Every structure is written in C-alpha cells, then in structure tokens.
Image (cartoon, rainbow, N blue to C red; front, side):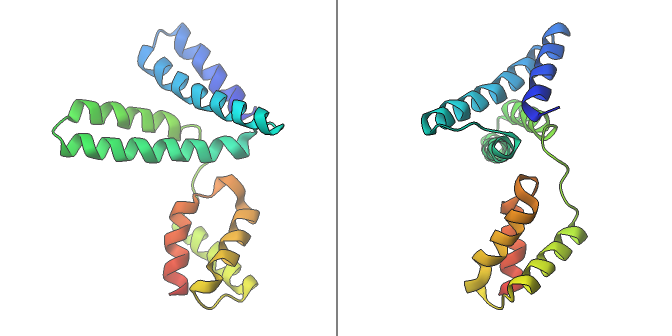
Length: 150
C-alpha cells in the first residue's frame, strides 16, 4: 500500500470513528499532498512516496518550531495540539535509522568518495541520498557528516 493510500484509508477510519482531531490532522496532510500534486502537474510529472516523505519531514519541522514558540509564549494547550499533529505525521514516516547504522552508512560513504574535508561534503551527501533516498532524514545526517569531515 502506498503512502497516499495509507493516509486515505486512515482518514476514512478516523471519520467513521468520529475522531475529529485526527480527521483534521490527516486532512492537513492530504491538503499538502494535493499542493504537491498541483505543482507536479504544472511540470508534467507525478509525485510518489519519495516526494511525500520530505514534505512530511518539513511539516514536522514547522510544527516543532511552532510548539516550541507556544511553550515559550505560555500557551501549552496550543503546543500540545502541535505535538499531537507531529505524532500523527510521524506515523507515516519510515522508521529512522539508529545511530550506529547511521554512523556506519556515513563512514562507508566517506570511504567511497575519499572525502577528507568539508569541500567533499556534497559528494558524501549525494551518495547517502542516492543510497537511502527519502527514508533518511538529511537534516540529521547533515550534522553528523559535518562533524565527521571537520
């Protein structure tokens, strides 16, 4: 089952169970997917799971920032709402690589590209992206690669 089909099925299930908060959260995700569809149609292409995963990661990032601002501003009820949305969005992401596996993958990419300095970071990131695609959180990887090459 594709990610799009999974989201659609979960929306139907939430609607039948009358879980209105979850329905609203999933509708937000489907709206973003439709935005991607429209943009892809303008370019003459279609989107797949590989395009949806980075969009979900960006949604999590923006909601995390919002939750932090709400907590700092003394609005814990709004922060909790954002955190509930984060949990829903994370349920559609592939499982993240653990630290040991990530370190191994980065070491292999560094060895493969013969990277020795920050100038070679793009090569290493390119190899990792080609090998793992959307299943890898490039934001998380970025910091580890920088530390490795510094």
